[in-house]
Image (cartoon, rainbow, N blue to C red):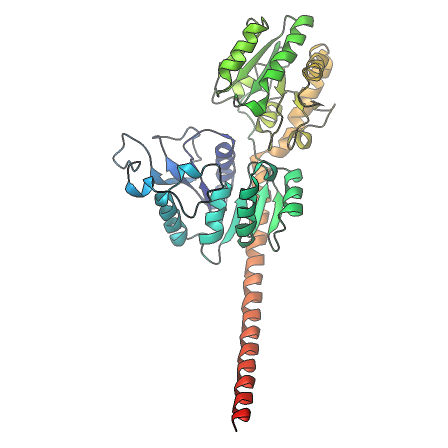
Length: 416
């Protein structure tokens, strides 16, 4: 199969980009795969794609490059096809509308995959007939605004499938969107096994990673760790990531006098060498569309203490077996979960081993197999559906012609 992914910006950093590279690279072992990035703003991508995956872009935003298009008159006009209800709308333009349309009009492939709602709408409206059209949901339907949901409901029926990263979100799509004829499948993100030995579980470090954003609730983690320090001052916490909350979190650490126990480490790529330095992973989000960092930590042999927030953690962690699930927004509960593992070396190591084993189900090879099966089924269904549509069309055409002949005969009889 020739499979083409359409992504917002393959040259940036983020969960959607990482998982797209992981999936594309694994599929490329058996298929012809490309990643088409709408934007390119730097010379080289942060995540290097597999050598078998072709990478190209549609709009060049490298300011010092010879092909810079940020001042093109079309780029300064608003988009008309990319939906105004989508969060990235202001980054799109008449130029991206035209380039995406040209790309889809000339694209020769078996399967085209969109990776965010606005691009899925482009594919639904503009992909060529005969191609399998798949729209990926990397967030959740519940986080989309009401206007965006209406936009998706209007255009998604033209897709062949919508994939979500959790079963919970797939159920929401099936119940609320009502997309007749569109297959809704939950397929998790793939996380490769790290190319280094798993954590031994002896280091007195708790590790957290992700954007320093309000939804991650690092303030809860910091307050919880203050309670951990009161009982176990020999343990420390490292938080990896960048974001708008950094100054606020730094101030909270200083206010609580935890500057010798909690460290804001900034972003790190790759993150695996940092995970294996720790013994416990921590996630205190109020919402996780999936939970990539949970799986990353588990693949490095760390048990994770996570809030049981919608949608992902409860589908990743088997509570009490390979990690712990605690209530959202409760520093006392987070602290109790951390101390349970900190104070019991055998339990911590046992859960770490279980996490390493259970997280193998998120290996990109297994995830790619599920997508391969989905694509194959959709191609077969598409051929059958096309045949049925042609048959139905022929029958309707015959019926309409017969009806027209009957009306003509009736008019002739009345005239005589």
